[in-house]
Amino acid sequence: MRNVWDPMTITAPRPRRHKLRESIPAQPPAQPRCSACGTDAYLEFTDYVPASYAPDRESLRLPLVSYSCKHCGRHYSHKVPEDWVPPGWQWYA
Image 1 (cartoon, rainbow, N blue to C red):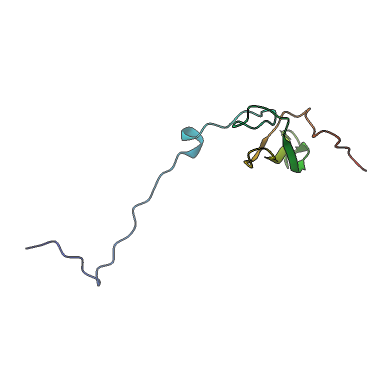
Image 2 (image 1 turned 120 degrees about the vertical axis):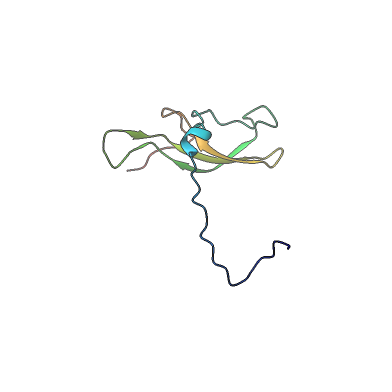
């Protein structure tokens, strides 16, 4: 007898256990640059979120930057070191 799928049979999905923190290491903050062109000369910054305190008021969230390369057209977004700011960026209170 063949193993035939019966539409009236209900099966519970198997629980999946993902260990994302162990399987995907966190990327360290890096200076913005285009990995394809190997330079930061053609970067156009589209978004910047400065460093801020986490809700626990103890830890600091690193700044986040989004940018694209005007030479090759690639887009990037990642955390940057806490002392880095985009060229010409000023904080207005």
